[in-house]
Image 1: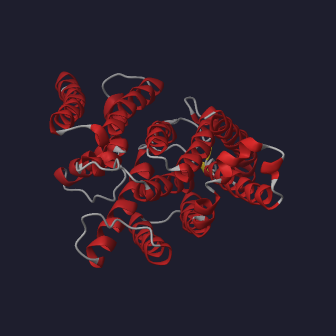
Image 2: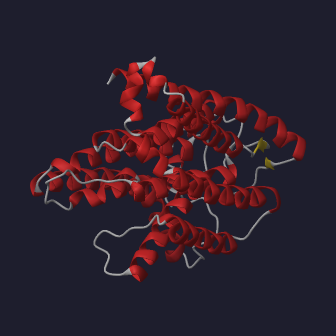
Length: 369
């Protein structure tokens, strides 16, 4: 237990440190190459801000994972467990870690494709439809080439591909849509990742837990510069990369307790990512109700609606962090609950959403909108 606590702490600090270093570098590069986010009527910031924070997230995550993966292989080759017996607790998982090497390459490769698509959009602009179609292609690549897909209770390959593509593209876009306020997308991703990390530990999924703790460190490093008032934004390059990683990792996760006959744990990812999913569906519903394209940018996101209630930028971010954590943490209990326990969790989550919807409704009524 002690060795794993030290390993996770080490990985957390590696991700955090590298993220901060690369975010600082990204600020300078953004000014040099003029990759800036300029204010406009649908945005809430008042001055041009560097738009290359995604570089710190991508570099921090990839370098930490790749370098430590090879260091682990080297330690095994040199039989360092003879000098440091505590390493035996880690080396016992080496066969499993080696088997996911190809999967890591797939996640990073497809994640980088999304990063560069987002980077092009940040610099030159890209229509929402084109980004959407490219995301579908990348989702199909990760499914077909790297066998990351939803198969549980899915009748055939076609439905497996369709549901997995919908999940990956949907979650990827949800974090892209959330990136509309200082610290929002990264902070909600952080809350979701913390809960997912605990769930992975409980399920004994060492690789996913290790990957997530690095991800948590990277997000913390980025948030140091991105929380209100933000010195840098992640841009589409960063938000697409974050959303894609969480979408893929939730597919790879195992949520059942051995010997349990309950099927409720399959809804764990939905609870963990409940706030991004709610924001996406609610803003799409508003656009459809207003007769507008679902791809049209606007200021009707969850965060914007809370701002109109009189909350501050920092207050909105912290409020949504809390809501995300409170909804997501219920997911940890799902594998061990019976029907009544699950019903209580569902009702609790629905009550939280209902309270927020009532706040929005009476806020609009009071403002006469």
